[in-house]
Length: 168
Ligand code: FES
Ligand code: FES
View (cartoon, rainbow, N blue to C red):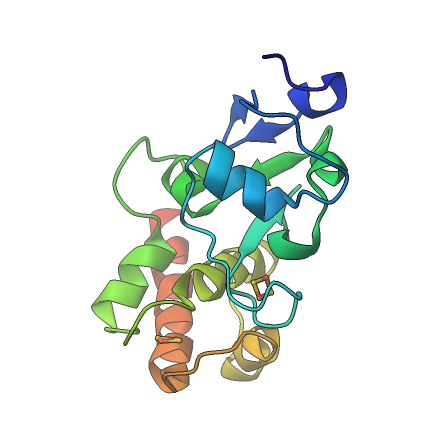
């Protein structure tokens, strides 16, 4: 089955997006990513745009995929957690932000981490040298029910160092 023409132009993780099903007007980008494209990095949390678990990058900007209609991604460049290594020029392995989260053991259950990592990538692409206040501000609307915020903030600051070092 062919996807609607408007959705065929969507690029997901550097690849033209071909959908196996035709989304209705109420189908969200998160649904298409997880259910049709098997990209399970973005998580379903609240489904209301309030927790950040579903965060992806749309044209390089962090966005909540649970409240974006699938047709709203037409013509856009979407990056999920799975696309991060290629985004930093690596064909495989981990993005420095992912590595920093591991280094700082910034997880308990891990459910919020997709959103935290994607927000951190968006921040560090805009601002390679944020201070702690900037990191706190960026992540303030992302929920972590396990209370891992201190380690997460440390991980983002460590990631900034790793990314700057990688460019020298
Ligand atoms: Fe999208 Fe909570 S699942 S913001
Ligand atoms: Fe469990 Fe953040 S580590 S919600």
